[in-house]
Length: 328
Ligand code: TRP
Image 1 (spheres, rainbow, N blue to C red):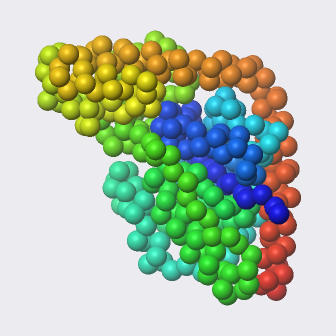
Image 2 (cartoon, rainbow, N blue to C red; image 1 turned 90 degrees about the vertical axis):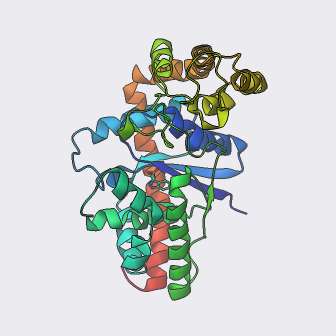
């Protein structure tokens, strides 16, 4: 029997941060290593256009993101990594899917509503409203069974399931109904204490940040506002640093929680401990990043090979679609 497929993707908007890692990328690496799935990793460059029409850096950003992926341990021998815009089948399947979903269904999308609020958008483009339809085409073109994403993407996987079901009912069975796969930290808080770490909020720690930068950024991070002096008792449950400790300093978490609550542990010391652990984690990633930065031709070859493999799978799926629909 054929292996189940993972389809994962991210928008290339610059260097990745630790929220990307603990929210999704960590799962990509784990699922790929498990050998239970066949993985496809998509660089969603068309999707960037929904919120930013400036394409002048999009290629550099795509290469930079690919380097982050490789540095985190994704294996290009096992899984194709490719740009959406290189595989034209995405646009065709997207067009067909737009006929199978109502405008009202897309307007109900909570992730879209959140974006409209955060980016203070007054008017939506047709393409932005259709964002999840393009994402559904990304996933279903490769017959993805599982989609490892952050929490904010779950509504898009729901829409993908709706579209798969609708297509299969109308034209015959082609697509699986994919499931989202979440991590324990599917939404990592930002350094400013906001609910989400995000480039646009400038509250991130990048996977490529060096040890000194990590220390400085953490030093300025917002903690429990009621813990003003060192010996004041703190509330770990409202503190972003505590969440980071849970992920990067798991072995000392009991001690940190007790120290924070009693007031014995001050925020400055807690942040230093956190920075040390984060830097231990980031060290090997930065090393590997350097390797690829010095070998950009190798990175470009990885992309070209991935695009060739992805294209074959996409063509095969579209053949099935054409046959079922008697079109194309
Ligand atoms: N919307 C995703 C994000 O912002 C990126 C994405 C595009 C994606 N296509 C995908 C994720 C397909 C998973 C599967 O993170």
